[in-house]
Image (cartoon, rainbow, N blue to C red; front, side):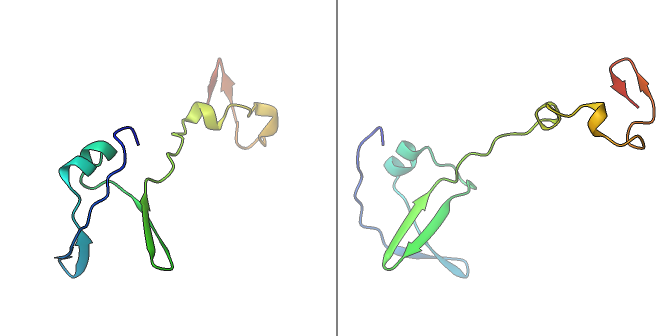
Length: 87
């Protein structure tokens, strides 16, 4: 962590029907957390680890079809070809 280690003692608080732990402003700032952000919670014996999910690659149509060519497709998928467009 760029800002160093933070050790805090926190109290569990009621959040609706569940429970939660409030983080200090400094912790939120260092970790660049935002409301609504998705985090992974892992339980191991008496230890709770909270981490960010690994970022997923954003797939585009171009990336998905990178190695696909008309010869790979059955004739019923490509009925007519004009220029570079598939119709």
